Length: 340
Image 1 (cartoon, rainbow, N blue to C red):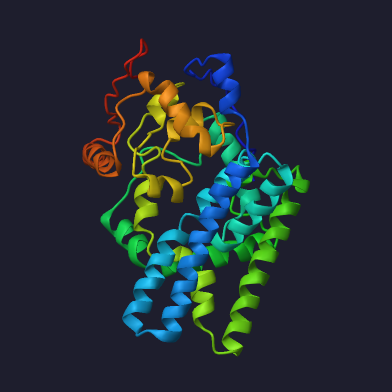
Image 2 (image 1 turned 120 degrees about the horizontal axis):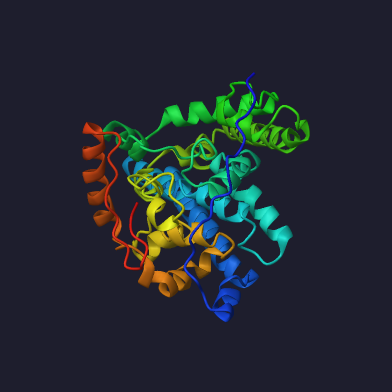
């Protein structure tokens, strides 16, 4: 196996200056506000799951299909909860972060230890390959990609089961590439936590399926284990807006990240990650303070659009990049710095 590439430099990121008092208040964590976000999200997921079970046991199948789709729409956003809780910034009490990151990761089929190893580099070297390979531009998205994830994505479920099985077997980095960079062969201690979690994840979902099927409750595995792979259209549109069509190899988060402004319901389900430029600029700010951060630095941000406006922009960029992969859009900044 080839030696992992070493970081070439520390990126000197530009960050909009903040008054010290505001900087401090934005970084304050609150267990109460964390429970509102985390508990609120889990309550919505529990509500749509309960509605699905009720429909299955009381209503006709078309209503159940609609309920499954609705529950899937919500369940797709478990990964954003894992992301935020994995930063350790949601709850003031560290043990609560550690507990709830496992809860949302279980229901979302997520591997927080694997993700964090990559994501720390993603924040440090955002869109500076080879030091960040979590997102590599240009990203190609197709209508086929969207349709598959928007409605039902069985290939995604099959992939994550195979991936979890490989991690549970201890074959981390066996395929080389970015995973081998994040988990170097000379640091085997880094592999213990993800291996244990993968075994818990597989064991838990297999156990739920076996017990449910034994009692004739096949809808339970659909609600618990299959939901993150159903009805992902909204998640697809939100999550893929973060970096697609931006600039790489620039030391300015305003040029390599995109902030969008959807309605409050979508922002809540998305764990406020629509404020993505702000999240990268000040990654230790809790998600429930990102709106305040956005308002504080908005005077230095490029124009921010809603979900529809953002995808009109992304679509135009992808059409240009289909003809010329090196194409980078002009991004107008209101401050002294200009687009690369």
